[in-house]
Image (cartoon, rainbow, N blue to C red; front, side, top):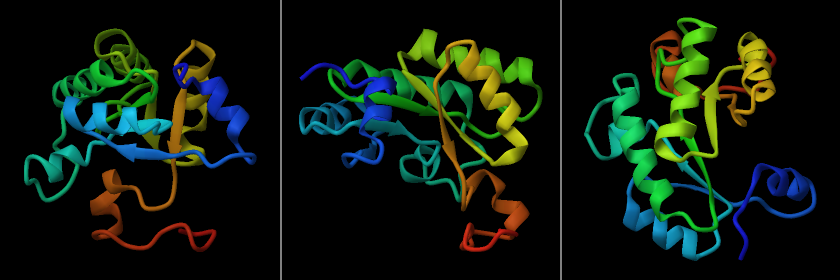
Length: 160
């Protein structure tokens, strides 16, 4: 199988199912990759799943870069997407571009994931225009845990 790319993912949209799963380590990523999973997401949920934290907020760039590098090292077929942690893209567009670029340059990710909606659209456009593919995350956004007062259903109404 040839490596999955953002172009191939786009071509599958609306025609074939796109399969995405989360991986945090080399072994899991190698297993999922060998099964032909299209996208491996290295989620900031690693903070909760592997480190026992109550939420994703304290995940750091260093943590995410290390786990993304482990997953990318295992992936032969799958497209690796790195979840940008809290405050790695919200402070300024310049910092967001620098941090997103680090995921591609230092860890081997092929794309980054950002949480948000219309408020981050200009940043998403900028990242894509400079060559950094972006996977958007709408609905329940764990990085907005405190804003919502915990984990609550989101995206069912225009307000949410």
